[in-house]
Amino acid sequence: MRKILIYSVLSISLLACKKNDEKVAETEAKEDSIKVEPTKSVADVAELTELSPEKISEVLKSNHSDTLYVTNFFATWCGPCMQEIPHFRKKMDELKNQPVKFTFVSLDNKTDWATKVSDFADEYDIKNNIILLDGMLLKQEFFSQNFQSWNGESIPFTLIRKGNKSDETVGSMTEEMLNQKIEKLLADNSSAKAIDNKEKAMISSPKKSLK
Image (cartoon, rainbow, N blue to C red; front, side):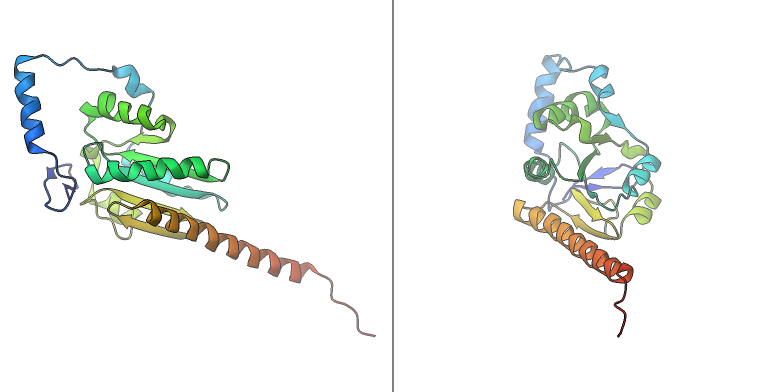
C-alpha cells in the first residue's frame, strides 16, 4: 500500500495504492510534445472546503449524540480508495433521511485539487462532503491525538463514530464490511438510548403506595 509519511513524503508500498508506472511514463511522454491545458480553474477549488490539520481535528471531535459520523481519508491516485467510494456513495443515499454525516478528506497534492479532486467530487456529487487537507502541514501529533490505530502511513482510512463509540478501519472496505460497521454502531447506540430512556422512566414513575 502506498504510504503517506508524516511530512508528506510519498513512498511506494507493495501492498496497495501503487500508481501504474507505465501509464505515468506514457503520460509524461505525451506531455513532452503536447501542452496539456487544465480542465478546471481556481474557482473550482473555491467550491471545495480546505481546512488546516487543527480545524480537521475540531471536525473529528464534533459530537452530536444523535448523529453518526463517517469520515474517510482518501486520495484520487489511490486505487483501493477509489474502489470503496461507490459503497460510501450508495450508503449516503440509503441514509439520506437519517442523522448521518459523511465527510471525505482528500490527501491529494494541491496541484490536483482543481482537476482530479474536483472532477471526482462532481462524478459522485459529493462536493459539499469533501475537505481538502494539505499533507505538507501534517505532523505526527495530528495522528496520535485523533486516532487509536492510524499513524498516517497508509490510506484509505475510515473513522465511524456515534456518541462514545467508534470504529477505525485502515485499508479498503467491501460494501458488506461498511454496512456491518455502520449498522452495528447505529444498533448499539439505539439500544443504549432505549435502556437510558427506560431507566429514566422508572426513576420518574411515582411509587404505588402500600395499603
